[in-house]
Length: 170
Picture 1 (tube, rainbow, N blue to C red):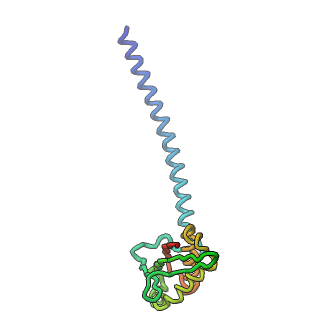
Picture 2: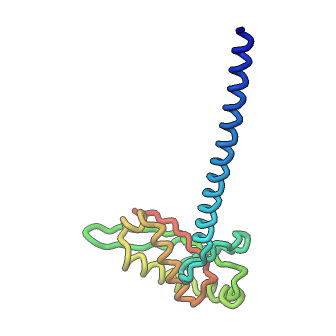
Picture 3: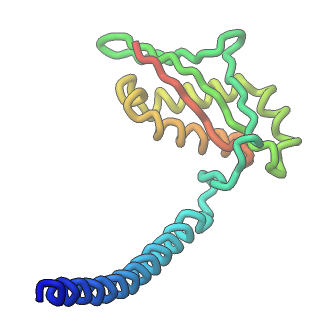
């Protein structure tokens, strides 16, 4: 009698396991379909190709980027002075990333390298007109984006891929 009850419970367990498995497989398939659909939407949005001239191509390979240190004469830093009730200084180390695979690269790279004075002036002017000594350190990303836009406009090219700024405020 006990054997029959155990056999019946094992069969019921087997049937319920089969029902549960088929139910979970169907739910799992729907979940995977939903996740795939969301991933496709995100990929389309991320790779959606913004036409904003200030944004650089997200598909640029880092091996195609040449980094140029901005020099101020012999110095590799730019010192910006903020005069107010108290004098403050921002010492900026600036590096420009240039896309070597961009169509303008060959004609603009020499111009960029030969015009460091204009680059220093543009960055210094931007730092003093739009930022304070406090905000330049806290909003580094915004400052980098503003420098990128200003340099792209100055040299009239989008081959300038990025501007990296490391500020030290005193």
